[in-house]
Length: 396
Ligand SMILES: *Cc1c(COP(=O)(O)O)cnc(C)c1O
Image 1 (spheres, rainbow, N blue to C red):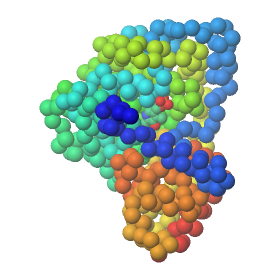
Image 2 (image 1 turned 135 degrees about the vertical axis):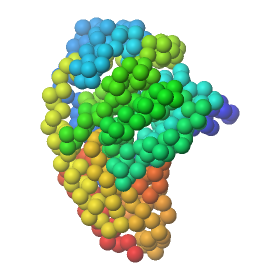
Image 3 (image 1 turned 45 degrees about the horizontal axis):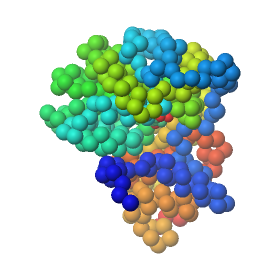
């Protein structure tokens, strides 16, 4: 069989692969606590489920316009105005099958073979692969753990060339949990305006923040910046709606029109009843506060546990639901007489010998790190941290 050449240019989602391995082992009767989850453990709130069921029963089950119906577009526009104080028109909004789908559309309509796209590393696994699938070249810029994993602006400046088409931002960030400082966002925006570069701002975790952190959206920095930014958001994380596949993008009408054109030949509209449910979701975020408090307790327990381990350091994440500890101090040490080689090796040792399942950092471009999600119960989390400490005590 000969697959299309483009299939060789990118990789399968590594996080989904590890999560698959862990659930397969658990199905075989192994007891592995999975820290690989890329989704909240909380269920979708009832009022959103009710809105979906009502839409289905009311017969709202037909195609809608490709970018979404008026109800969801209006709800997104109002929500964005209320939360960011920024106004969009209806032809500047598109809903899609998840934020990932919106990001895919953006990469397909904006990036050419001769383009370079800046990605801050550690990065969400799909950014480089979507850029590669568009035929463009990902260019990585470091985030400094000593500076709360904020993007290194000097490194950014050194990586910009005449071919730089866009910069992808993700604050709060998956995997590091970093909320970029206002100063960092302002500097990135200034560079984008001066050098005529687009910004793709993935704000999917914007509501999942702790310690009073307030992520700054570049679209709030005036029209110069807004007119070159495509803001991506969705319902998966804030509203625990990962399986419903609802996301959206806001941006210049010309880019949105191109995304609509592409989507019209690929998938058409986002699922119709889910558009109505998502519109209802945006009207009431009051359920979120108790969930954030729970996430915050877990974060504190987890980060404390990591920093109490010899050879491990963990930056305190200000958003999302992941900790991203640095295990450099464990690399080269021996477990069962065998030196630990890298993050993949360490993750496999933990899965096979400690009953703990993280995602290797190399999947996010950060060798020697592991990503641990805290979207699991406190009891499981604490048991997992005990197992990790026991593993640590066996290191030679
Ligand atoms: C989960 C996630 C997405 C995709 O979310 P969907 O709306 O479910 O497609 C996008 N970006 C980041 C950083 C994520 O973690």
